[in-house]
Image (cartoon, rainbow, N blue to C red; front, side):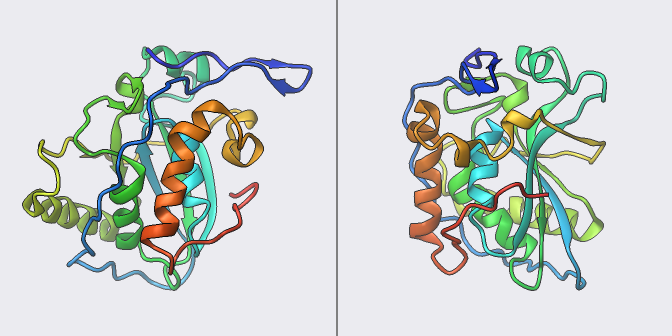
Length: 226
């Protein structure tokens, strides 16, 4: 286990939640999806699990068209949706992020491309980088039949692309319920830009987003999203 409990003392963060020391892995130029999402007008939601939710939220909070990004828990019960329980590995939850987005600006298939390019290593099972356990699994959680079809097609496309030496371990999980994480986890990258984990692990992901997808990169962090 590489998570250390986050404690609040006098309203300030005392310890780190995602406490690894490894450097971020190299991003991968995932291909554009051949199965383009055909989404109706209006805001949509998507759920992604890709290791520590700080970085997942941080990347998508810099994507144009994303209107909300909330860190939380998916896969378990409401009773067990508490950080200390989830980080212990005894629940069915994954640390996840619920995204609200405008498909007129950023489509679901484009969000998937960003996820696989700079957010998560899809070949890692029940871990991401320094964080180990099923709560750090990489998962896509479709919120509609269209998202499900697009996700299945894109995983199949990536499986044939040969971008990674190892097979893809990312799974598509059925949506159960999403529970927002504690307030001190929200906008964590924005509030703690010099935090050791953020600087070593998550800031490089945002930098890769800016470098690889400048057309959808937003310089400002979407504060208090969702």
